[in-house]
Image (tube, rainbow over all chains, first blue to last red; front, side, top):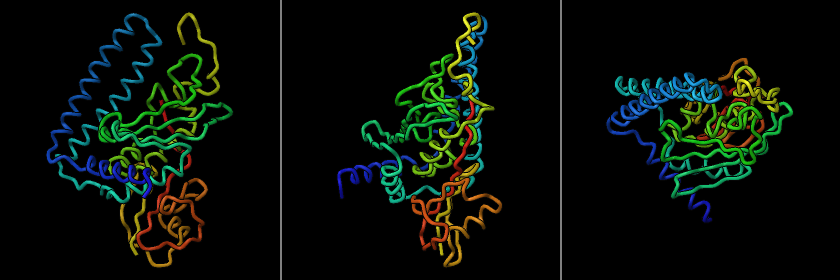
Length: 232
Length: 73
């Protein structure tokens, strides 16, 4: 067994252990409480930005709050689900997770496991959407946070941000966060079951798809000039 | 025979199902995805691309992932 295979095996065992359900639902309640706190804080910051006419900041805060409220809804559903004692979906055994990690090495341009940071990362091929070159993206999953609000990041390798908002490096990525849209449930399901190959595949296909009806910045506005009056 | 079927469309379905012996990838797709077009999906057996007429084996892992998945803002 090669060094890479041994690292993948060790990671698979740790990831499997991390996926085991808590004996109580106290972890889910704690996350619900934490998410509620983020919503309260986000709402306060948004009110302040709007009061001061900080239009750019208010737009970003509004987007962030929308995401956090959605996460609050998901966490509330998880707590409710635990209370109803519904059967949990099957968690993949370590062998399946191990084979996922081996397959990811061949599927993506770059692949890495960092045991100390508890991360698995892959890098896509350069992405081009409707003539717009965005470069490659690294998808970094932190398995220590696999059941948390933000278990993964999407990082532009060579950022080509929108002119009017340099936080937007992809029509559906702001900062390091992908707005998952249609992918949300499939991503959530894949992570909770330990189906890492599916998780990275779904995220990649989402990055490869342009949804002009709901983008942080539309492709035809990507290189637009910033308005000095209203920061739009 | 028993296979692991994963459908990453929508909510994501992943579970072990029983299918007749000698079922091909194409037949399984048509049974489970009805009017969908195979070209709109990444169909993998044991994480690898396969021919539509490949015959499934006991214990195979079949995943069906849409090629286009719309993000949002």
